[in-house]
Length: 416
Ligand code: PMP
Image (tube, rainbow, N blue to C red; front, side, top):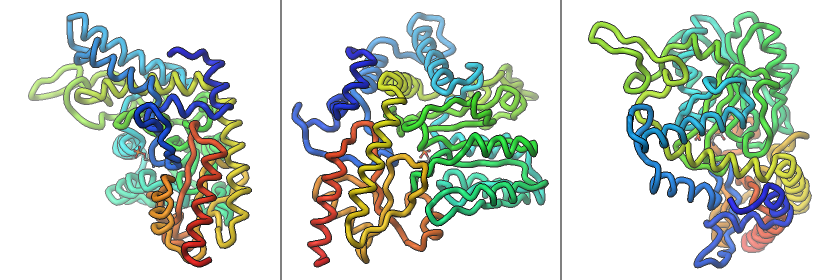
């Protein structure tokens, strides 16, 4: 990368980071795209795209099995990526990082292995009312097959977790807690360190869904003391199809495999197979090698910008955006917790969120309209859907102004 850390930090503050992302250019000119859907998936900086191209150009082969140089090089990059993720999460050991397709696969892996070994009939799995479907359905499936129950911690009217209720519901039958670090539909930041402490006081392990947290907040799994932490590469400016699962070494070592196949075995006969040690035990088949290379470049990029600056920028956008949106008559922000990332879910008069989204698309403002894979959140707030603007490091106050201008135009269009 040609910039120093310092210059990337400055470019964030100057609103110039956008130029690092080719999607915002057409024939080398800014195309005016206002991208406010980073919560669904973030755009990719040039360095991520070139890292993947370079890898295929110069170092590509399958990993862990070649005796020739290219395979060794590819293996080095893949395993280097594991070390990169370890450092990103401040995990103690590199073996604690398992590569997966993304958050959804990570949670399914945990439900099928760790979860299955922990819960039985009558046991309880504690989640919250603000979870993404990916942190509901795998546990529900586990409950169906084991006779365990899902217990749901309620949320307050502003979209924060009800911590007192969490403590109350954490009972003698609770065998596992799984909670979002940050809610995708509301933007709420949950007090995950406190949640882990309360759960551990009762001997209950905690899974944290970090999909929406990693692009906004620094994460230190040793400090959090969580048992598992999972995230997706594509939300943190990396490629799709790659993500990571952190698990404490003791848990991973005790877990049965998830999928069977190549790379996860030690020896195979028709009578019996023995499994490889972690993390290979959980990485059956040829993995997304280029995805790991791209994820490595994404984490390098984000760390070079720096989380201090990213958080400061996010807080400024959150504050500014909240102020602007609250001034619009007939607009209600859904999710106004004290601790939030720059995500604005809103409803507008009686205009359907899909109409809002379509109108905004016509103004080159890309937002998401729908239930955001969090239908229970919609039900909690009594709305069928919301329009959601979710921001990333390339967004600026001008983008928020463009959003507001388009909403005002839309209101006029509807005669409001
Ligand atoms: N959890 C949360 C909080 C999310 O926002 C998402 C993605 N919208 C997921 C899980 C699922 O992530 P993925 O689709 O990358 O598996």
